Image: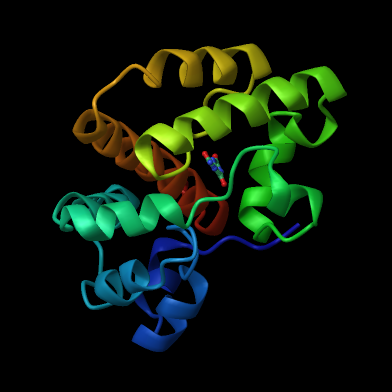
Length: 175
Ligand SMILES: NC(=O)N[C@H]1NC(=O)NC1=O
């Protein structure tokens, strides 16, 4: 098991070390870790998480769209080709998305396709907080009726949840 960092250890990191360690807490978007590395030291871990969340909130719509588009489809082609990031692979496996029946995979792929056709970005949901296949499917079926603007904000809200859980894999919240 990976040793997690205490608050002191996080606060002692150089900007470069911080950047390397938190590089993928926002999927494939290293700018977040660069931005937040300038805010060290943190009073507690909530402040660290809030800093990433605030960073996401203040981004332009264009950058929010770019971030959503960096997320892999759930149970999609990147997963089939074993090209997911380690974080994403772990998250998708927590929800059993790597073990779907052919029928469920087809349902998921069809809905993902329809969603992407409508919004031009993939459906993003924090699967560790919605770890049942049925809940994920319900989420996509309901959200597909939303307006684009609304979906960008909901999607970024899910990116924040994913980011928080990824940070909690790195830090020891009790220290
Ligand atoms: N598309 C999508 O939601 N992807 C993700 N969700 C999650 O929890 N991890 C991911 O990579």
